[in-house]
Image (tube, rainbow, N blue to C red; front, side):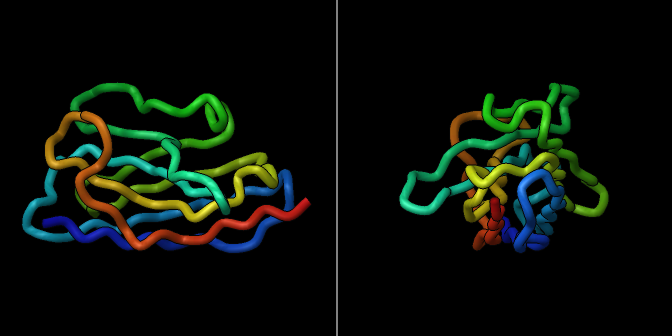
Length: 121
């Protein structure tokens, strides 16, 4: 199994920046592909970005492309999401996810507990 713990959420004004982190651990984690998802209030969980360690480029949802940057440090088992030019519609619980394999395929197999990001107008 893989355990994931997100951190870095909080309150920020529109136009501001925030960087989330996700620490991975467990016997099943080594070169797993990873992702960020988010769940806005009253809405379903939605895809944000994915990253793999096989040379594939990160993939972003249209709503965050150009503003968010996903990155990772496999040696440290850390995943990051740098969020810039934040908008009120970015307000959501942000979840870190890990896939069973090194390849992104469907939804992640493991999830963190989430961290709240609130963007004020």
